[in-house]
Length: 528
Image 1 (cartoon, rainbow, N blue to C red):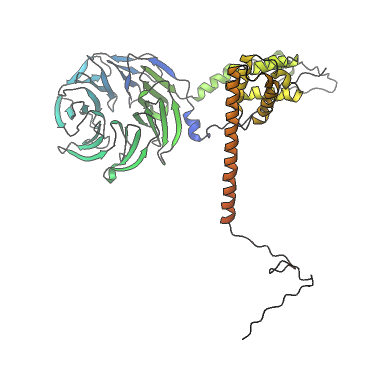
Image 2: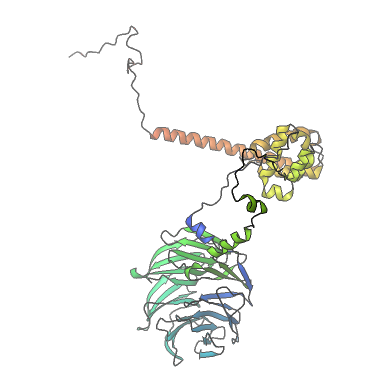
């Protein structure tokens, strides 16, 4: 007896995203590691010095994690209220942070107690950063002021009061110790020079500014606020270059890849977008479980760290070659006894008798039922909730196999209200899909023939049949409209191309008659 042939599941082309080098690069990360913090994570900052630990600011604590640690290596908890913006100095030895109590604290990474406390602001300090000379600190506060502080003496150097709303972001130049930029909820960005008492450049973002980023060359500035990410040319007096609107909610954080060729933005819409800095098009997208407040990228893009509103810190590490070697090593099996006796690639001799090993056939549940000719239960199995929603091609393939056998009508008959409703729901959801339409149209016709006599007895089934009728009518209208559009396009294309005449030998261009038909064309002579 011939062996049973399993149902052939038709493989349809997937309309997925185009696989590019960026897709391969940004998907080459391991599964995320989740760490629960004590509150919403408002800032993440990587140390510029190896091994590139990172500081996580959440609620009243700042935790320092190692590149691959799941527990904090160091914790700073001497805050009376919510801490903000913990940032490393360029040598990785000092860390500065603001606080809701308006005091700025300076910590030694190897200690616990604050080395300096800078008092002068009257409201919460959300912005802190080190000036490039390492001996000054920039701060920005909700009291509308930004200030420069001297580290050795813990004294205030400059006080700028030009913003008219909260200052929530700022960045200091790494190339010029006198330049720094602040962003405020008054929609403006201001470039300050410490050598003068006022700002030297002002740009209007149009939305409350949440984050700022300077390119390594410091010729371009990126600002984020509202749903917009904007790029400004500082060398041309703050001229706007690009305005991006790819997020659905407020953009909260910005980051640049190690090469400087990719820009990352995080938003409350739970997405991280990756832009190509050449044309500023989105080349990749990361999805997260909650709204994102902070984002940081490790040197050489080895890790992506994201802080969310639900107090979860998500860490993705890049896959390495060693990981793939370990996986292959685990899958490698020890050689069998046959290999030791006959070698790795044995060649059969002329007198050898080949004994074939029977291959056990593994059948799906619907195939097992088809094998015993239980067609109704086979179709019910293919209509299971997970299968019909996630793998509709399996359900359609089973229907196609039943139709080939001539038993589809038997499988569709004899159903109660619930089973018939489930079947009609599947038809409504997939009938207009061009991949499944040839099979499902046949099934729909059979259902109408079988259950024509019971129409009107079940309100639920009647509603489903009306929905199916409306769906088909709309689809027919769409097809007719498309045919009309195709006809219009054909006419436009035909009229846009010049008409080409093909000369035929022996045919007169005047009336299309051949010269040998007994008709002589005489030229008309005008009288002078």
